Length: 166
Image (cartoon, rainbow, N blue to C red):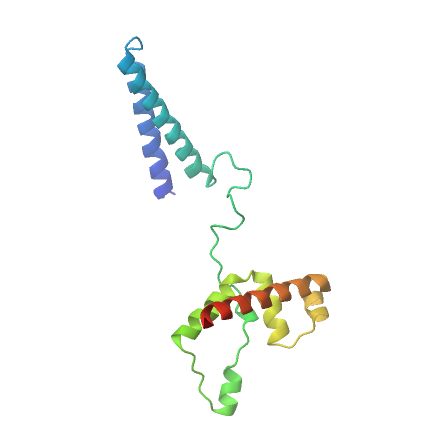
């Protein structure tokens, strides 16, 4: 199946071959041609770097594939199970839930700042009232690890709230 990346790789490869042909055609005894050859070699090296990056999806020469861990990941609230369902409570009380657009953005910012585990442990502990031990058992983690996730999540919540209040 062809996609835009394969098309670009093919286009860059053809451009690289064209540059190689131009470099071979240059007279190596001329000083001005040597300057051109230097420029062409630099362009071919840049194209090879780009082709390698497009083919592998990782920056060439790095061991982790990205300079910072998870720098390209967009965090989504991937499991709706971690967000409590309040529909039943609203039906029982006949209340309407209203949250402003600004508050929704703040809430989304808070959840996006957390890792999946931090979000999961935080919501289960704070909203569902589960003990850290029970969360640890259900998630297959140590109790101290769950505690650390919750502490980090609380810190992120307080940082975001302070940032948005001021």
